[in-house]
Length: 99
View 1: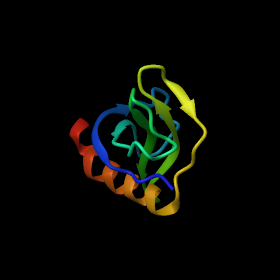
View 2: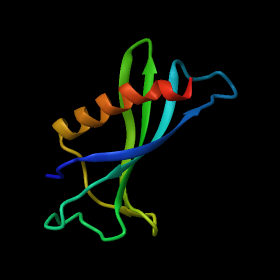
View 3: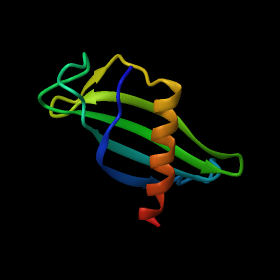
View 4: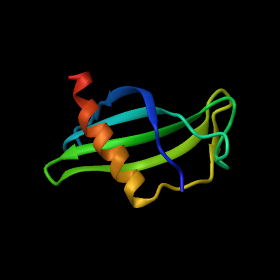
């Protein structure tokens, strides 16, 4: 289990130039504070890239991956349900920055 402590983020609203997708999509890059004892820890830092979607069906995370900052190496770890719920709530709260 990864103990998520989100310390910052950048967000960009993704445009659908052809109008094929419903709702709004945002790409988030979250900065995570990971304990040194955690197997995910890196002294370069750990990030989480995620796509957040808000449409007529509600909101959801459609894609995410963890990566080592600096090298951008993708890490083979998954989020647990409670961690994904935390990320979803964080994205929901911060998506409006781009509007």
